[in-house]
Length: 137
Image (tube, rainbow, N blue to C red; front, side):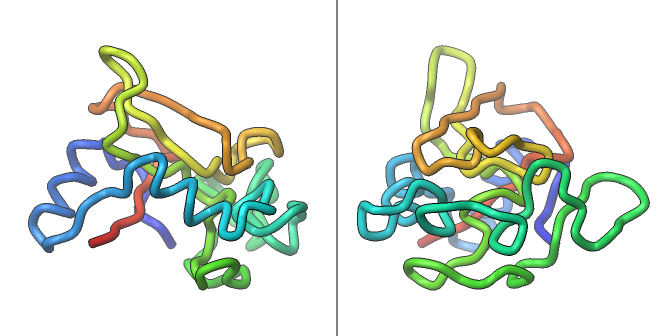
């Protein structure tokens, strides 16, 4: 399962310690959109057979967060999993003077929030059961 309840500071500290970084929102979108034809990080359409979103709870978990293990759904595009749904992913990109951008939508998100162009945001010290992160080099 992805890490949840992690702030941007926690995600960044993890990255720094292990020699990774968070992808910028534009890097994230370029990978999620793959060849320019993707509406969602899992292709042109989204469904409960492709992504964990809209409180689907595919594992029948008894309490939130209703995340699924990485790889539970097939890989798409560049071979990555969960580019739509599961957890919103922190980026270092700044939306305004106080908020940072999150991308991808999460297990709690409605369909429109899981598109490759949707931008979520929150303050960097926020923690949420719907927020996590992805690393890159």
